[in-house]
Length: 174
Image (cartoon, rainbow, N blue to C red):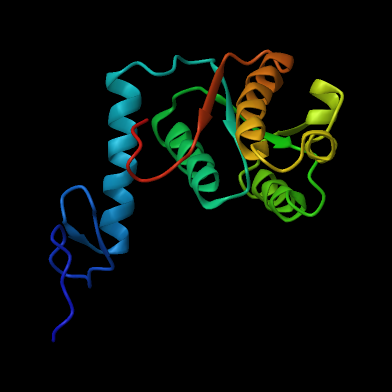
């Protein structure tokens, strides 16, 4: 069976099939379309204005890493005039966040963005390890998720930032 060819450039080998339209794309065309769609959403919805400070919720995972990369790229390419800051949350779970925080630190260096790491201990006076020791493991993921979202908002507020963006998955819209 011959490899599929990109539906856009009709030259390169397709490496991805987009779930929303089943379009077969090469890496170059996928990145271009992906960036164009995000730019279109930002500009047509007036999502930001020049001078806005934007906190990018940075977990160290692929979704937030891609978000940081694409916002930096588009901000520079289209002169949005945004001040981008990585904001990461340390829940205080031993052995859970250590590696991903190192990734966030590398991302901050690579993308030349300031990074603020805010801990539950700083914001709430306790860590998730302490919460689990008190209430047990049942339901702790639910609590942690709610606290993490609130921590992003509080961390942004501490930095004087009123826009927090988060990366999730390919089906989410900016």
